[in-house]
Amino acid sequence: MSLHRASRPRRRSAPEVPSLCVSVQRTVRFEEVDAVRFMWHGRYASWLEDGREAMGRAYGISYLDFRDSGVVVPLKLFHLDFHHPLLYGQTYTIHAELFWNEAAVLDFEYRIEDAAGLVTTTASTTQLMLDLNGNLLMEPPAFYREFCAQWRQGKVVCRQ
Image (tube, rainbow, N blue to C red; front, side, top):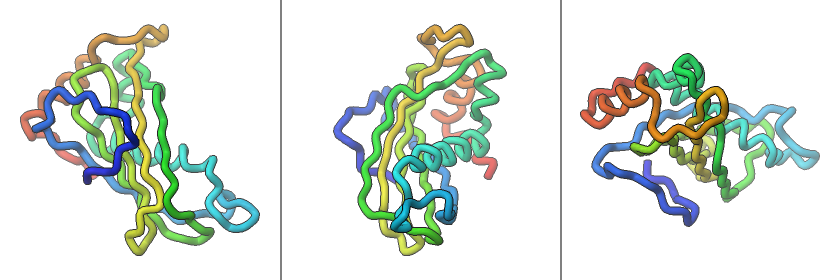
């Protein structure tokens, strides 16, 4: 997918490992627009969450999977670039891409496109891995390390 990245470098220890991608299609709802029918800027964080949730379901790395391993993954960084507005009733697609990283973080990039394929928004997030007491983990939980070993070997299967 190779999305435009907002000027912060990515820490990748294995650039030969391909990113994982999912897409989610939605329609702008009435509750999501402002008085002039433009998508209200405060809803974009929720849309990115739709992409992250879809990624978790598709690859077996959901928030519940982390929680069951005694780990939470809160946002550390959030960056969003608006390119074109979305309007009430428009169909759009959220593309979420997870990048390889051996650290205890999740690095995502996102692209939101309208039905014609026009890129309306690009974004990125970084999530840290913490134990249930809020302590920063230095390495991912065992289930995620196993997932990454399969990912690196090209054996990860998308469940979508």
